Length: 322
Image (tube, rainbow, N blue to C red; front, side, top):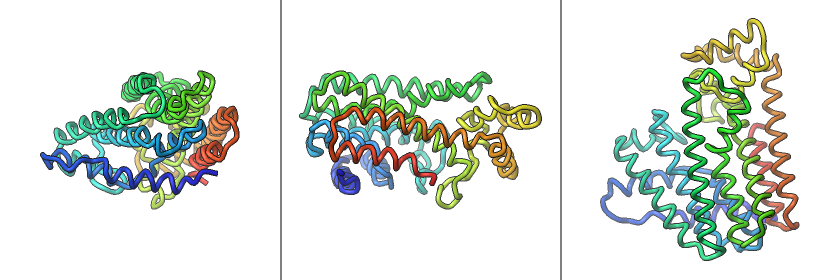
């Protein structure tokens, strides 16, 4: 089995030299600050494993892997501005530490730098990779816009939420999987299997994130437990509760969706109602379902240590709540 820890370490080492030491410092310092933040580097590691599973050595896939991590962090900088978030991973967000215009500009720089890293890729057909990358960006932005619409749209279903996830979360994850096939010049079926594995992994990852928002230990989670409900956010748990509960429970959850959200003191009550209604078990089942679907897609690849490592990482991502 490919060593995930070793791949993650190689990504960290490579990222240390990604940010150029150029002027002006107030543009490049925020970029360096973001990339120095603690992250699991899941996306580049997924890409490296997918590439190895298709026969491309990690060293040849590294530029594309780094591009995905820089791009991912760019999206976080802009997400934090849109969400008015003050902290991320225990540190001030860029727009708080500096200011909003600087954060926007630093994010723009990071997006551009991700394309520069992508252009350094020598394996596979760069034109095909860029086409897939452009489609990823379009789908991610569409998903982000749809998520923003949810704040004022009373007719959001679980199925619509899942389609939004396929863009906002799944598009980049799917690109990381599919890029392995593109770098190897693999056939259309292999590309499709890896892309679909990424979409299913993205769904499992986001649903689990929504579940942990209410059920995780406060210290381990690093965020306020129940924050989605406090904000009245139309995420998986609340949408599923609205679709499956009746009577007093339905009125309780509808009041949260109608905003301004839930009083923090009522979080234990909301959790108890969801547990009793089977909403939390439903979410756990959905995570298991989408994880199994991702693994089934990966099973179509030829047996290899890299394929086993990729499958193990997918299972590990789905096991964060255990």
